[in-house]
Image 1 (tube, helix red, strand yellow):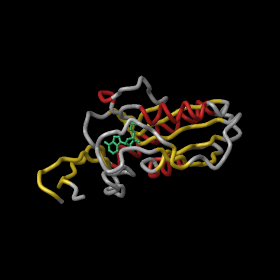
Image 2 (cartoon, rainbow, N blue to C red):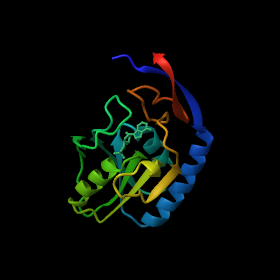
Image 3 (cartoon, rainbow, N blue to C red):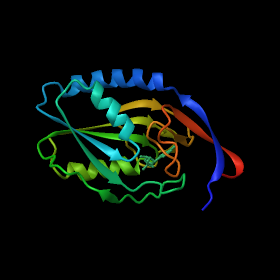
Amino acid sequence: MAQPAYEIDEMISAKSIAARIEALAREIKSTFDGTDKLIVVGLLRGSFVFIADLVRELDLPVEVDFLEASSYGDSTESSREVRILKDLRGEIAGRDVLVVEDIVDTGFTLSHVVALLKTRGPKRLETIALLDKPSRREIDIRATWTGFEIPDEFVVGYGIDYAQRNRNLPYIGAVRFTGGAA
Ligand code: IMP
């Protein structure tokens, strides 16, 4: 199916993202200081760039694992039904866990994943989202740490896609539909 044509307006620069991640990593370190191992769980696929930058700023022993939950498919609207497409490789029982999400939008994905992982008995489970769109929330959930609150706009870049495109942009940009087909 042809995608509608769009342009991308820069919303958050690569430099601002890097500065914010440094500050977040310091807060995470102080929360988990003394841990023997922090399991950093990236939600695929949108968090892959964020998690790569975040763990390199984290001065803690970390293990990285990934979980994939179904999200928007190729549309810009949430399906509201969350399915686990790929589960963790490792065990999290008795462990410190940090779940890394790209965007909290309606909140369905994060709340589903947190509820699931809590059933596995982690010692402590916290969450971080690079972006938060509070005006879109349908489930009452907030990540422990948020990079940036943004307005109700569809964004791409820094790992985040529109129909699998634009993940490789170094910044976060807002999609502006220009009419017509791409
Ligand atoms: P939620 O379940 O509605 O909170 O949606 C979370 C997921 O939807 C995110 O992890 C993203 O994969 C996707 N998503 C939400 N907003 C956007 C956006 O603006 N651009 C691209 N993907 C988005």
